[in-house]
Image 1: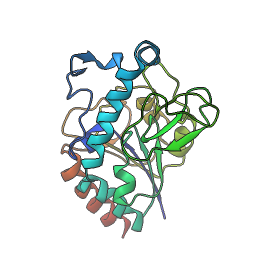
Image 2: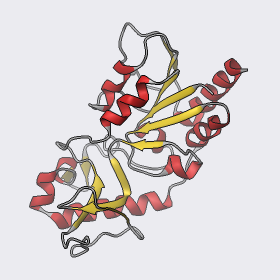
Image 3: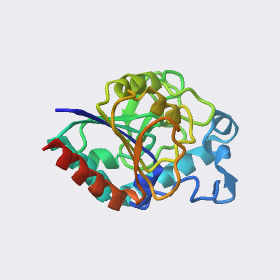
Length: 230
């Protein structure tokens, strides 16, 4: 089986009703997202940050995977598919994808605020002040906040280097370091970009664009790839 590596962004989950920061206009209620998604925000107003992520979890519990998610899961019948996602939701997994690397963390998980290796599945949607890890520290969202390093980026680079087909779905390729992953794609392999908007891609790469939202574009991509794989 050929290795198909897919980089996904907020566009694929937006069709499932998951609001992106851009859709929020950079604001949540009256707060700038930097006020609720940074280490400084956590230090300044932990309760506000907890409320923000609790609301996002409630939203996620109501969301369902869409044809974009299901289309990628179906491709596992034909390819060795690895998904690298910038999304913190679990819609890829719920659609049936088995190899998903979350660059920016996972909304349904929490971790110790003193030991990043102590990670737990959250039961339900609510994380409260006073919920502690086994070391006695407050639990925080298992999210890579603005200004924090992205621990999974090195593993992502390794995956991208091994790609035999590469696809970008629902991301504008402007958020780093994720956007830089395209620079590690082997130069000779086919690259597909699924997005209704203009996506900034390296000029020297030969790329096939499918200018559709993920729910429409991924089934088109699926049919193209399966047809070429026969």
